[in-house]
Length: 294
Image 1 (cartoon, rainbow, N blue to C red):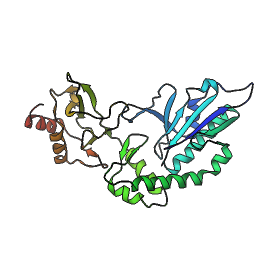
Image 2: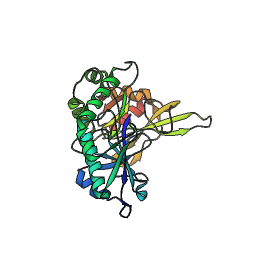
Image 3: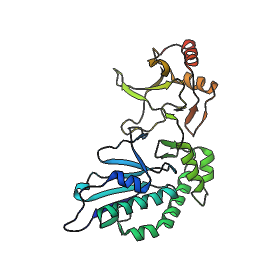
Image 4: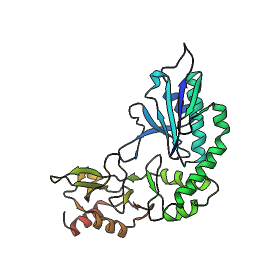
């Protein structure tokens, strides 16, 4: 679910044909990036006129910014629901900055089929926050046996049972906002597989652990989001020795890797991801020498 606003430049002779993206980021105190196929942020990148905007001091779920039709005087922006109170306010600031650059603009919400002004949008912030709170409650109260996945600005979050229980009945977004900022405001590598088809058209997933790099790995290698591939047939782990810029020969059992990572201190990050501590070259070779290649 999202709140999507089409912003159209108005005026017969002064319709804007460009947007100063750098100025928008500076004025709104935001940074940007683009998702790869696994919904993991590649910071500082854009994709064919689109980008994900985020506030580095309060990282939320990301604001989608689409300038592909700016030549026609049109910008589209949206935010995911539920999101944080801070991100809703950032969203309104982005809209106001686009209007400032356009000079004059109209605003139409696609989901509500409703027109807004910047003034009416700003006055709706409390209701937008309340609606996000309601949708967070509902999402966390769904079937407990199913994953509740939120695409955050930086990566997907598989919401764990503790947070689901907390947010089933929360009456504000304060804890949600602090939680998702804290988990994203860390220097962690979010592991994503390289996907290949073998001769029998089975899809194989190869994850890579880099030495001395704290990382997030799925406990079940099949649990990832991808824009093109929904499932895999088999998963493996490979290793890269950073200090030697060298790939370790072979690929190994992912299941055995997970057990090894837990022995080395990996702890749950969310419902599906393990936070794997820095693992040295020596520890990697200890694993490699104790198991057989697959």
